Image (cartoon, rainbow, N blue to C red; front, side, top):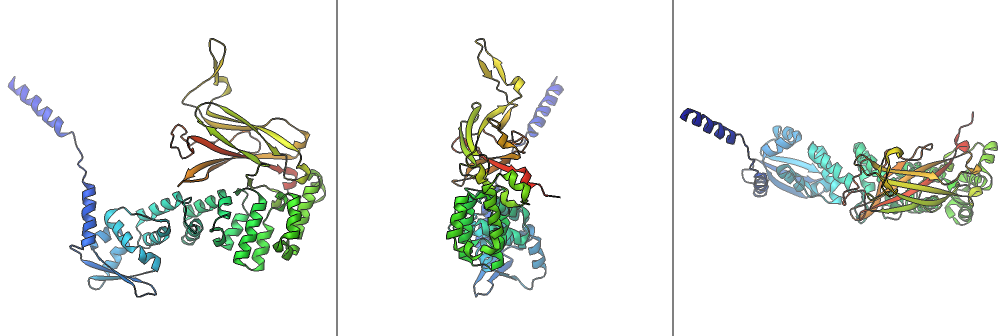
Length: 460
């Protein structure tokens, strides 16, 4: 009937009306807002930005509606102002980027250079523009490895400490600790504060070539900064002399002007280190109270302590690798070697379901989407020399950030286990551009840290 046809047509029309299409002209709006700021059309407030301790003044024609929408600080200032001019006093670094900051309030985007990050962060914090503040914290966290002429991580760390930004502070400290070898060789090393230096020297997770490298860098820092004697003594006593081979300790004792000058302050530590190198650690522990940090290794990259391992096409199949390390840091154990076997599996499954037989009887690894990357490190043999020694294993994953190879992640095994349970748990190795891969390869460095348990148990 005609009535039924009309009803069907109305339903079809209603159905069409319910299909929404979004017309997005937001970029046009941003362009108009930028023009509004640039031309000053309809401006109802003049921002007069005075640079502290100079005669420099910036004048910006702005709009109170935009300022108050973005910042409650501006809202308060505009409510209490006299006339159409708002006078703002800013430090030179903040004044230099103030027009950038105001443009962000109009357009919602901003271009940032490494040397502008702190000044913009200060402005975002001062005027309580939280979206910009959070964005800048994220920018700094992601650009720690970027190249800059004099370095920027130490400056960002000091700033984060000053304002109480724990996230940024910890990110900077982790970057400095994990990439210490490159930091030691940079211009930034000399600018490290005394507090930061002493904080780094206490850490066992530092990644560097050797303890000797750290001592030589400390010597350079002291020469450059000329701190008071108390600081020098504290720093020298934080060096782990037991981790330096005796031949190098002898050379330092005779050739280092710094050790000669402060010999009395560290004589007990040097004496303990030479005793440590000359006798069995277990024998030494029977007669001396040696419960101190000089016997705890850091993450050393030199060949005595571990080995690099580059895994090409890491999603393809299981890989194995063998390497040797020194049994322990004691000179008494310097000629003893431990052979280690490492197994990497891109898609680990329990042993019962890892393999299937083909008709020809050949073993074929099972492939499923449920598996995840695993790495297992075990000694190839056992030895009576292992008594009293526990081996902590550390797997370092390298990555390329801003064109520079840096440490992406560090996985520590519990001493009693063979593998790191959370190894690469968040990594997408299937993606060629994965932040865990360098040119489609997985770059690892395995470090074995022997700990003499009997030395590290406090005596009653």
